[in-house]
Image (cartoon, helix red, strand yellow):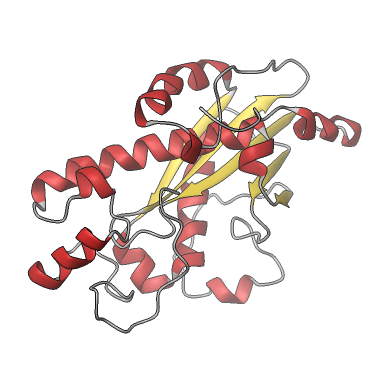
Amino acid sequence: MTGKAPTLQYERSFLSEGHRFLAGCDEVGRGALAGPVSVGLVVVDITAAKGLRGVRDSKLLSPAEREALVPRIRRWAIAYGVGHAEASEIDEHGLMAALRLAGNRAWERVRLTVRPDAVILDGNHNWLAPVAQASLFDDAPRQEMSCDAPVHTRIKADLQCLSVAAASVLAKVERDAMMISMAGDHPGYGWDVNKGYATAGHRAAIDGLGASNQHRITWRLGSTAGLRMPPLEIGG
């Protein structure tokens, strides 16, 4: 395990605004060629929450470390949820809209327990509940329940904010399990190892086998294809 441990310092700064329930939010699978994008939400009561030893951004942990943390995170959190948007939804609606779908599916699960007062979102773009750019999502499916809490973006929140790091762990473990399960139905792509990311072996398998129904067919898939693809975030 490497890197400085994330804390609740930023989350607790929201106490001055009268907030109590803070949700950390992070995504995984953005840079994969196959499988869903997945979004985790972890809600903490910042008036009572304590630190949680061992939690880091999911990319800094081994699979065994992540899996061991899941039950501890679930006990620690006031509420949690993971939502997914399938490859076909990414192709149909675009990556940002698919992230919003996945994030709001996680939001629906969290809202069964508590409504967060605010959300801390990793990164610099509010894809969870955009207001100014709502027109970008006009073609996305409408959801009965969507995030209506203030969303605060923060670069490197997954490294600094404990709730966000915890959300990344839950999302990563759940998505990895999905990819391992799908690998049995789609042998040859190595999803049990590469989890759908753009490794050389995965691209070579697509060259030989073609794309499956779990691939993002609007992306550059094989080693020689030329369609657009978002920047890779291997392991994220």
